[in-house]
Image 1 (spheres, one colour):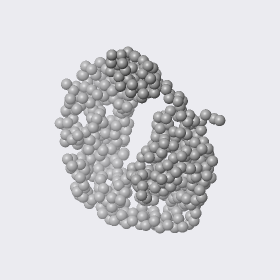
Image 2: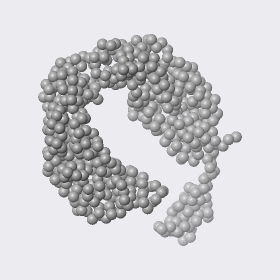
Image 3: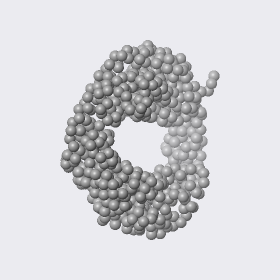
Image 4: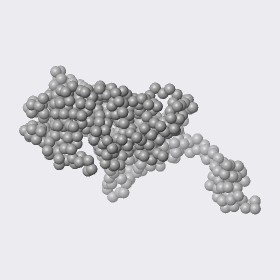
Length: 599
């Protein structure tokens, strides 16, 4: 007989929400590994498997028996264990606890003094005697954002449980949870194979369920889903609009993915493409289809859990999709009827941040900043004017009906409405994100990075208003000071070390101009603190031993966690580990200077 067997645990329940399935499958491998380690049962790989209707874990090569245990255990100090040479109750209790006699205890000298030490010996038990309680505890430990009770019991789970399968090789592990006793009987697909299934062995689980129209392995289910989506898109006369989010969402909604092609009518194509896709994605979890000419086709792909009566499903889906698009078309037509500029005053009623004013104030700062930044960098007048005009319209779509329904379309709807209302295309484009303007700014500043001005008001405002801010805000402010100094001085900053904007990849370079022009008091304070960092003897001493680093660690995206991992590397302990320690200290000193607590 082999010394190992495969172990299977399956919990069958009513359909779980997709997020519950994903969270449980992330937690199961660690729960199982931790429990088997506690039991001293060696094992192979751990696979978390599951669908909306079941959660399972399959462990290969689990040892049939624990190894015998023999370990030294330190007990009480000798002076407490004996009195006048006679063992005290402390010595007797310690000997009884580890299963030996007092005579078997040894005296061992430690840094804390002399202690009694005994050897605990424990014969390994059969895995079959241990797994029942272990599997029950694993079931009760599976985390759910919300749990529910059912019947008259007090046990809580993500959804009511209906069956448990627990097999160790071919043998049933007797587990009882919530009044349900484990066996070898599982169930197939609710609609395509509703009969019960008897599992002969643990290692036959995946294949047996597949034959019953249940793809219990999430990776296999995702692959099959994608293949069928591609086939359906081709059958619909186009190509699939790929969307990893929708793959993940539908993955935990079905046990075997089937795809239905639906449609919604050409009249809805007057809507911007992103609106149609947002309706399909946000409300229905449908995929879009693009034609050979690149245009959106009036069709969608729906992933469903059954192949039975697809026409009924298609009719229902079409009816719902048309209703959703009718609502979106109403929003679109109502929004287009109101000029973008007329919406601007309504931004005064939206609070951006309690101590930083309204969205109207933020939009005004964006407009002013676009002009000043363009002039400071001597950008072409046409580019600056387009950016300023676009900035004037920016944020106006926040008060539109469409963005109220689909917040993720902010900016995109502003551009669409501006184009529909005859605004200059370049201005309309800048009203969305200012991409061409910021690209010109990025080239002028040699940062090689696109960025967005409107992301900076909140961070900069924190400093100016003396609000609370985190370490990442301080670290970015430090680099903004460096970038500002280098740009205003006509050359990139070079001091005791080279701060490289390419390596740091911050999205806040543009904010330094508002930082400098509108918050000069704060800038001067931080600039003075940054200069103090440059002169700090400890910093200069640390940097003198950098061993020719090509990129400064403060700008290379390092974190404290990375520094800690460097210290744990077995290779080159005197090099890599020392670098990690130095970086951590540099980071600490920098924070002390910028927070004004370094003396």
